[in-house]
Length: 212
Image (cartoon, rainbow, N blue to C red; front, side):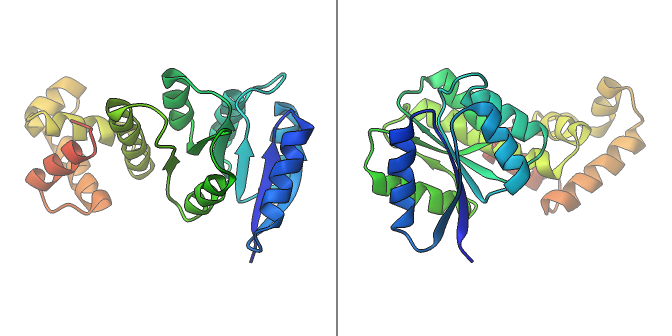
């Protein structure tokens, strides 16, 4: 089955070029072209394409606001940002809001195909020209946090951080104003959800994911 794609950019020439690019690849089908943020949201809600290729700077509702709304509505569509420029703050914000890929318009068209393919497979794509090593570490922590947030409740995530900082169950209970027994139940549930075998493994997991 072909990967369905919606394109969102306020420049008709860019939309034409993107549509022709994806038409050359048999595994992709362009199902919509959108000129602004409001049209993009209506389209994603109605068609639920596999991938949204989204420009950051659009009239009315911009790309970040589109991402924010799609995240709030828990849309299954995965998003690749295609933008002319992106500063570090926007990049971090875009990843926090659920963008799985970021490609600069100045890059070779084939890289966009590779990015969309990787994102559709469930991966992430960040252009090597974007950001430094520290920013990449920050982005990876954001991605890890998103993954863990999908598995744990906010209370469980809070307990993971406390365990990673060396707190025992009684101390965690005192901080959260809950009983030590309730903490033990939470910790047991965390072990099962994350597939770890005990406190030591949980601490390693938390540190590897940047939660400590």
